[in-house]
Image (cartoon, rainbow, N blue to C red):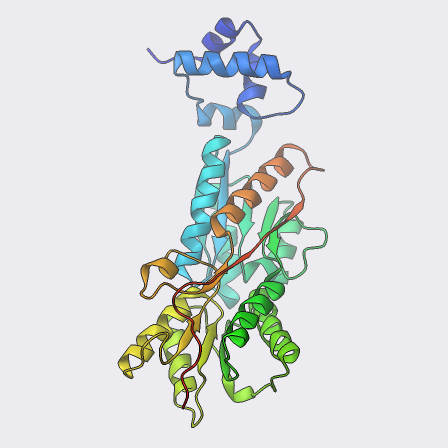
Length: 335
C-alpha cells in the first residue's frame, strides 16, 4: 500500500503542513525537524504526488528549458544540470524548443498554454532576446538566464568568457603561433562578442596585428565549422592555429584538416571552447576552455526555484573557467 503524507506526519510527529514545507524545500523549518521528516520519508518510501501538489498550490511543479541553440552538445549539458536540480527539488523538466524570428513568441505562448511551467530557463541567444524577455515580464513568468549579455537585475549564471579566451590565445602565442585564425559564433549570441573580444585583446597584448581575413563566422554548429575551416585553410597564407568559438566547430576543423592531409597538431593547432563531451571524444583530445555547462544549468535552475518560492530571492552567479591544455596544440612547424 502506498504511503500517504499523513503517514509521514504521524511517524515524524509533525503536522501535514510541516511535512509539505520540508518536501517543498521551504525556509523557516528547524534543521532537527527537517531531518526527522526526511527520515520518515525514507523509512516509509514516500513519494510526493505532483498532481496533488499542483492542485493545492496552483503550481505545475515543472520548469521549462526554452531554447533554439543549434549546439546539441551544449544543450545536452545544460539539460543534464537542470535535470539534476529538478530531481533534487521534486520538479519535472519540460523541453521547450522554439522557432526563430516570427515563430519564437507563438511557440513560447503555446508552451505555456499546453504545459503551464512555473518558470523557464533561457539559454543563448534567447537569453538576450528583448522580445522574449519583455513577453515573460509582461506575463509575470519567472525566468533565469544562462550567459546573458546584460546580467544586471537578472537571476541565473554567467562566466567571464573574454578573460578565458585571452588565456587560451595566450597559450597559442607562447607556443610560437602568430597567424591564429578564429571561427566566430552567430552575432546574436553574447558568447560570440565576448570570445571575439578575448581573441582581439590577446593579439593586442602579444603585439600581433589583427588580420580580418583570419576571422570567419560560424553558427556554433559542426556544419558551419566545416565551411569556416575551408575558408581559413584556403587562404594563400593560412593560419598555423585555429580557435573555434565552440567545440562543435573545433571538431569540424579536425574533419577539414584530415580531408586535406593535415595532421593535428603537427600541421595545424586547434582549440575550442566549452569542454563538451566531444572535446574528449575526438583524437587528439581538444585543447579548450572548460565552461562548467552542466553545473551552470543546475545553478540557474536552483536560483529559479528559489525565486519562484520567494519573489525577492535568486541572484546572478559567476562561475570560474579553466583552460585545458590537451594534445591538439603544439609549436608551429617551420614553413
